[in-house]
Image (cartoon, rainbow, N blue to C red):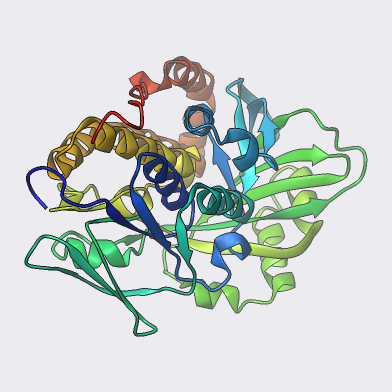
Length: 397
């Protein structure tokens, strides 16, 4: 759709974090928004937890939904780093919010419904076609169809919207990393201190936070050069997966194995994928945001924050600019620079995680205090990034 906006029907594909967030903002801006989610129950039963950095919380506050969306979140007052020998390396006092992926998605979807967004579950996109008049036809696996003036793909790293909208862009690629996350019940000797305790292990990177007396939230990332699918990883019995992680970290500080072995319930595990930097995020009045546009490696824990930043900035762009293509172009120019910088930071952190050689670990431990000080300074300035003011909802006719 070129020229002045002719319609206000928006199809948002993906009900995770970016999807409901952008749907809420656009519904409040006067658009008629439908949110399509592939799963029957939505994403609340899928995944471990998110770390939402300060700007992510700021987005929620600017949209007036922080209290409800982050109600179950746990405040993290900082990070503490140690190496595989238990030697303290550095502290980062930057605060963030840890929240279960499903709880955040479900809360956001509830706000979206209350805002007037139509939510369609069990609607898996199978094709997307641009019509002669610039509108879009969406077809779903159940045989249903829909049309919209604007399509926003928020459907993750393996985005169907991206595949149909931008068929020539690179596919998601396996990053050589497997992640895990879970809950553990431990003794009272683990004190609630507000910190996320990070360990650079010999064969993996582990972090945990005591969120209440006797309860711990934890994650683990390690390199696996042979790709295993979600299904293959899920088929491993839970006890066997936990035992394999404990064994992987047997040479690290004992606390690591103690936390992982105390896991209760299912331990989530997933292969990590990344999306190479896209030159183009949109075509006509269709666009991809969040992981669908720029999934980066998880070493900064900033993926969810980038996704909600995208949602906010896209809302702002569509409020400022009556021409959809122009709004998308301005949005893309703004966000590509931000994502490129965060991708560099993630790659640097990934290189620090599990060096193969003793001398590389020694160098890491020496430079870590300096690197963290720089990261604190950069993060205090949000890496030079500022959210744009959100225009009033009624500014664009």
